[in-house]
Image (tube, rainbow, N blue to C red; front, side, top):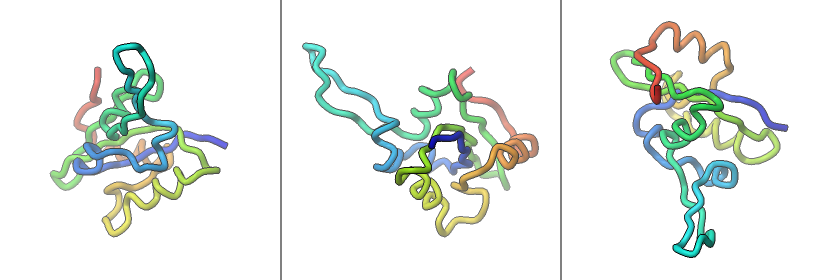
Length: 120
């Protein structure tokens, strides 16, 4: 089972590589000069939101207490480690930093704190 989930990421996490558990679904293939797939490179959340922008929408930059955050949407499997990894992102941080959000929660944060939509 897969579904859309939302994140409100701080800058450090937004610019960091996605967790290992996301690598199967969110990676960039690296081809050698002969067109042979040689490995999968990890991708950052920022890169992920750029790649998925036309499908899921680009990241929306928000400012919460003058600290930049980025609201992004993507698909996650509830049958794999993706869901657990997404919840761990916010461990030890104050909401909404690195929080997993419902669509309604994401809409509230965007409407209250929106700066701009990235990638347009």
